[in-house]
Amino acid sequence: MSATLNAELFSSYFGGAPTIHIPGFTHPVRAHFLEDILERSGYKLTSSNQLDDYGQDKVWKTQRQLLPRKRKNQITTLVEEALKNSSFETYGSRTRDSLVNWNPDCIGFNLIEAVLCHICRKERPGAVLVFMTGWDDITCLKDQLKAHPLLGDPNRVLLLACHGSMATSEQRLIFEKPPPNVRKVVLATNMAEASITINDIVFVVDCGKAKETTYDALNNTPCLLPSWISKASARQRRGRAGRVQPGECYHLYPRYKKFASRQHWGVPISCSTASRTTSCRKCSGIPEDDWSIRWK
Image (cartoon, rainbow, N blue to C red):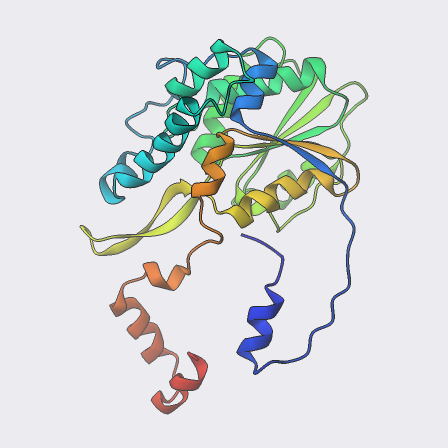
């Protein structure tokens, strides 16, 4: 999801229409990837501390059945090749061991908790925006953070959620300034990529995933499943921290993962059944002769 228009593509669609570019200004945002996060925080990934509280079977279970295994293998292979080629030679052995144990199928609640603790204890003041995949993840993570002695202390951390299904009055809280000496942490879905702007965001924590419309061939229906975000979405998330001041973005995946990502999200209609598209076309009342123009 991105609010940035592809001007060249848009112009070519209308036969080379002229465009006017007005440059904007954003503050610099420093990006930290998984290897940087592990090195700075001292956190170690193991096979057990990456399992999310609500059960690994629920996480990406359907996706692993639908998507080809080569996607996961490609990500894992990139990290393994980087380790073999000494691409992480500047990092400690603890960090390299953690990268070997990294499980790309997990959301990583414990890692998010560790990153938030690092920010609250060692970084400058400023609100934090955490990108999650959906409401279930937001709720489970929020419950876990509430049980933490630091992150669950309302006198030090204000935990808020941001989701499209929330009431307007509840969503309005995320735009308000927290009390003095209290750090605001907002748990949000990808709607926070472009739909809203929270002015006091200084830090962004990007889990690297979002729910995407995927076609379920077994049930012959489209469905929403967690998937790796595109490069455009990663840039958009990073930019949330640089709206009003310099910021920091913590990507919870290795730097080499971004080279395996798509440039942009796929077209949603490509994940829809032909019967659904045809039904919408018939119900629209538009003459069939006009569809060749409308679907140019």
